[in-house]
Image 1: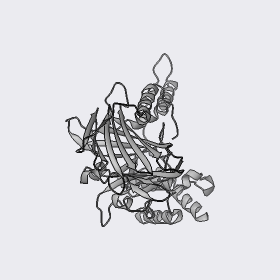
Image 2: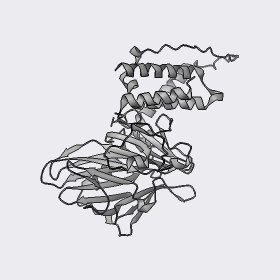
Image 3: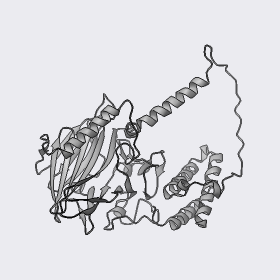
Image 4: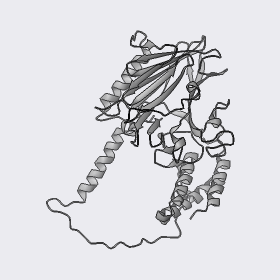
Length: 413
């Protein structure tokens, strides 16, 4: 069994070895028409200059309610807040609503400067509301326009709107080709009243700050409590692959550096900031010609009370169908046609546990040496050891052997 000291030592070694922790498309079968319509409508709203359904918001802001989704804006600042309408018709914020929503923010980086996309410092903001959609427009004269469209739609039909397609469109307003990159800091709040701040797509809790250089394995992260849940999806469908996704204390992400300092796998709580988690996302740089555009897309799926969001089933619907069909085939193949299967009386026996597990360096793949995989492995070991009465000793031995092999492989690099 892995001791606490070994777990801490492994984490420290991996942190030193790695240093800085370095959209697959899925065609939808039954839901393809709904998805295509969502993408088509959002693109129309974004690109069609003659689209007349946009109504400019008043200075005091606007509120959009669509299905279980609620979006509020502060046009004079260019800030926004997202919430869920629960079964009691009460509004539950999934992002921080303090300080006029300013802790959730977007940043634009050029070859010369980083702009925080909020009013002031040479940035001008407007907000518009349309059918099932909100638009925030940021204008940096002679540099760029950034239009952020949040289009609401249902993950299932019939059904209430419970998903948001977020499209950030950058337009080069300069006279020369320019390199742009977009960053978002989402000040999440649900996990701050839950046992863990975040969960990964495999259901494992995220216990410390962590950074992913690709979301092809994790695909999405979950922030939840007993009142609401929010899925942030960065892979699948037409998602734009981010270059970095960080789950960290808000104070780690809000610093002036473009990328956060994530060397030490710190706890979410710090001396200066207690119980204040956030998600940081940075997308790849794009070189854009004058008056040309570049887009970054991700999805938000919401659920009220103790329900689970359907974002993964929506974006990866074909994979879910394949899994269901495979399971159905397995069940059918074990049954004899025309008569019930014989019922055997089985006396449970305690499985034998091997004290040595064969796991050598040669058997390791590149994916197993990635920081994301190793952190997930450490979290899984810690989670198993927490559940001592129901501990699976065989699995724990296997995971420890794998971790030892990974550490040895990293030392040999």
